[in-house]
Image 1: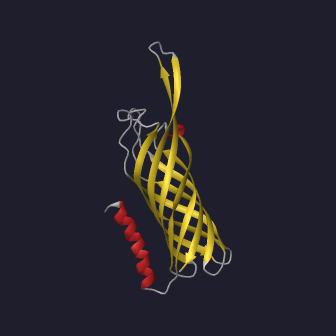
Image 2 (image 1 turned 180 degrees about the vertical axis):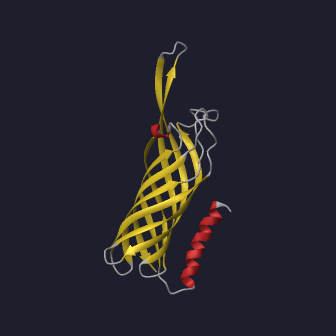
Image 3 (image 1 turned 45 degrees about the vertical axis):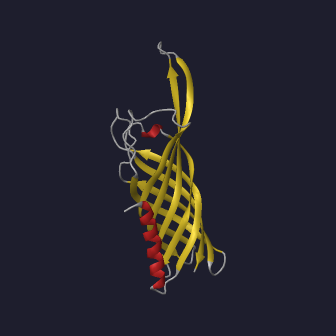
Length: 214
């Protein structure tokens, strides 16, 4: 199944649930900051990731007053800074150049959310899938990593968990503030060939959402 078809399927599922039941469906938008990291091989700790961001839509289908099924369709950008040191034939340093690796993903979490109704706080958790839309290095075409890294894979899968608070604006609208951790469980590639191991992702997110009751 293509990623576009999967997105449309999730959206269609939530609208179908709303048409066939009296339960409340909330649709909203969200944006936030992301701080990515990786693990799985001995040099993973030396990766220099920067703050990224996400933008997307959210769907909350309420099973009961305090329990809902929540899905997001997010665009996420992750940025990693690289620095290459150049040497001459006598092993003398001749200069340095900085690069940025940019990863662009579609992020699809499906979470079970529990709201502590009287407190305004909630927790949620469930699986997520990431689909790599684009990977590039800036300045463009400056270095060739095809001989030193394993193939970058398109799919990332793992578990997501978060905690947050709900701020009611009126009967239909509310804001949410959430801290979420996406823990990748599969190898996503890009491992230095000379060290072996795997690359598994981990992303801490600060998300601000605006939900609209319909």
